[in-house]
Image 1 (spheres, helix red, strand yellow):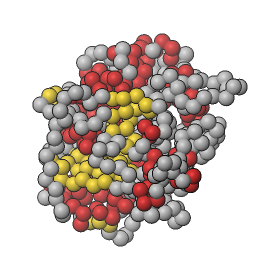
Image 2 (cartoon, one colour):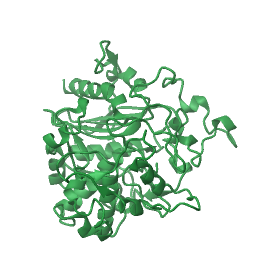
Image 3 (cartoon, one colour):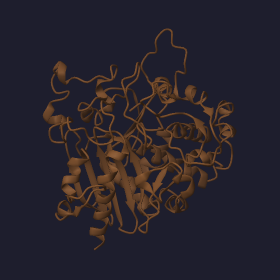
Image 4 (cartoon, helix red, strand yellow):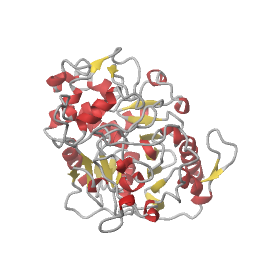
Length: 443
């Protein structure tokens, strides 16, 4: 997806915007009563994009934003490549590495109480509550649970949304560990074009941990927020004749102005990952799609190619444009659970995984005020629980997750299409559900 795949904790949902793609009709942090539930909004049952051509009332388009209106977006998130330009992430030419399967029938009945609720919910009920499109659970290296819903199939690909940030953060941290990027250097040392922007004086580490001081609002309810200018710049659609603003992600990043002091507080802003992508490209001579293929994807024994959505000049959207198969995302998570090892190789340096697990500055993170994430931190674009089990997460709007719990020897990957983008709509169910599953598997 070209843009807006991550919401800050207090953001309203995206509103209709001229020239831009992301449209969501709901502003509350919980599912409105008028929204059809997961079963009623199943895109296959609703017949979205079925037919030659599909009926007019079941056709979605990128150009008018209809593709991201609920419930049509439940089809779109598994089919972005049909609607917009993309760049491939090759899995290479080798045979895929099979994942061993040992299904457990006891998982569906696991019970937990959602945050703020009094009535218990089962694991199986939680899948519908979070509008799950697909989920894989690995325990001790084996798939113990795997389910798909709607139009996502085992051989299909789904938008990772802001889970993308954690993948890009991992690439960046690898390059730091290898000495190809110096995290203490200023961004402008790698990208001189950013010298006069807010990023010019920030260090690469501050970008990695999102402690930059930026005049950049992701308040989607404000039509003047910088996020909309970012969106317009990154859209691959033709610009109006009288448009004089930035025309690519690179163009936009040069316009971001400073606000506050770098390094003082965590502030989740998508543009940080776009900047990291630019730094990575300058340091390696490869864009993030090429580098992800070479350094990780074709070493994982992945089953499928992945892909990124791109802007009008083909720049991969580092902040949220990755689309993958679900099992391949599970391979990525399992690799991190195993200290960076997978397929008989050390793919990510162990020191990188150790550093992520150790977490970032909890006091800096606390200033962001995430009520459901107290005691957490943020490191190299991963969300770190700092709990006894050492769990850490990649998180994306509408319910995308990678959850790695080293103590429970468990990895959960989930793709979803919840009608509410904000993580606050999913966390009350997701967090206790994942913890309950970890406890159950540990027994």
